[in-house]
Length: 250
Image (cartoon, rainbow, N blue to C red):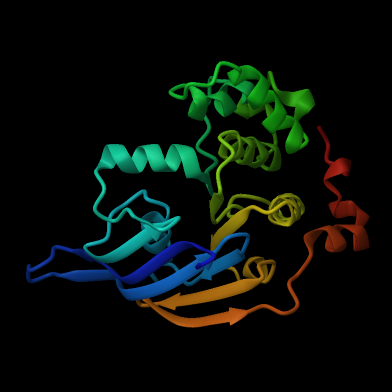
């Protein structure tokens, strides 16, 4: 029995299909991601990496090809069915945090649970914030938090539904080096606890934290290699105490 949580075969995404300006965002991509893996999808701007993430994460549908999630073919599902899958199985972390500005950290994390049948929404959200080290910031709005803290709220929001897979799209893109190491340490800890992590980045140094690096260019996979010596962000912070997030000025 396959241990792949995501299986894709010949995925393509075409814009203006059949027209004179037909554009392939990705072309004939086949890739499996196994349960508990820490994978980086790396490529330059316009390479197709975000399109691939959106399809693998059920945010978008392929023009052609097959996508299976936990052995279930989902590439032809309706938008409503894909939304249910995302809510149950997938968590997302984005470069821009995507937090509601006038809503505090606790309320932001509660959002994915609003349409669930769970009765203990507040407790689950608090627990998720505690897991990312923000127990003392639950009543703070985004503008009262640092960039690193906002991204930790976003990660707590991704975790609160207990998803099998976390997709992190350029999660350090808006952060300084200290906050970037903080977030990469947190992703590493989630991986060590058994989460499947798919990291999308254009930065080689960030991709090097993953255990497997998939390189994409011009909509095609051009490399798929095991990273035998991944960078460990926690070690980097230990070697440079000034980068320890506990020293952050709050």
